[in-house]
Length: 262
Image (spheres, one colour):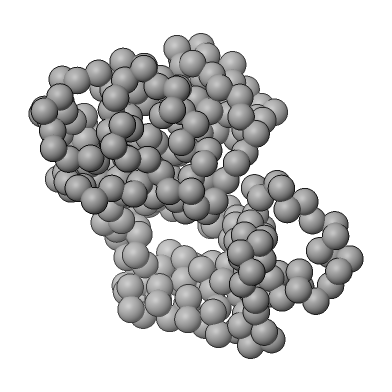
């Protein structure tokens, strides 16, 4: 098997980083953690786990995820979020690959998204194919500052799932949606020149709920499906409400640090 560099970006991930790096170490010969200013034990724990630590102020999702691969020793990179884990089936699938002679630029896996310990199969949360293993000499993450993905034309889907512990509980599901997620999205949209009107929050909020609960069958997942649909609606509503506030209220706009998206 070809040598692989494992890369993780972090910000206050002390609760996750050890398990994530231990997971990567099963198939990676090199570990890199790109930290954007953690104030907890993340950096110490990462170095104790054998990772090379790179300190980099947050640049946005795509640019930040490209920092580690640019300094990797190996051609193939396995990039995980700190709350993701490799499963036995993923490890086996990677070990079977002939990466040295591969014509593919990247490989994707299915992702099992969890709410607490509960694997959510509806609401668009599964199979949620994500590219995680890629040839850094042929491709990289897009420059998008939010929800960046690998820009590869030749991607092979592997028949294996990674684990993603998305939210610790229902409270975190709603606090993240109403807090940093919607604020970050609103700031990015404002910087891109997008604009909202007074109907935008309601229309986008209603559309998000219907998409998750009805079209992506959240109604079959009971309370969890309803909660995910509602949190998605809250996130969409607040994203456009905050964008409208940035447009209308100079005092609010001047108080925001647009260089700090996260």
